[in-house]
Length: 114
Length: 112
Image (tube, rainbow over all chains, first blue to last red; front, side, top):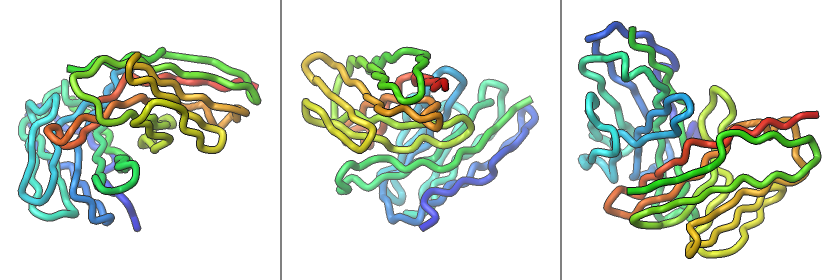
């Protein structure tokens, strides 16, 4: 199993550009999450999904959109990039019936908006 | 809402024991997690507590007191590779998709 994979690993965007951060998991997890991590600020939940076709907002959803057309994929879309979106983005997945239901994290995407 | 507090930084000596505390105030509680995060890497799962008491896992132990809103992570026989950030996280319930609410993390430096 590859676990949770994310692409790209690094990206620099100009203000106003758009991009999609890709996230794929091969563990057949139905729960998936997007977090952002700013220096010294911990991880904040952007969006989550409890299964294909079902998504919901987290703590900091403004400026982002998601979709979940398959169990495996959960892309995060930035439509009009702003400097405030400079951050490290982590995708995670979990399966609620597992013993600990821990979340497995992808390697992250480091995004800079200039 | 949820408020999770942990110390910003700690320093300890190789071979020693260190305890990292975490206090939380939450509107709902569905378990507490500790994750380890090395610089530039993803968080990795260390431990999980949902009932009061101590969970031991090799060199790592985690304790939970739900009535006090308190947990700690205990690291024994510290090694240089234990230098990392340690994240305390409280899991929400089904209405939030069991999402994690993280503290800001404790940066641990292990010195020779």
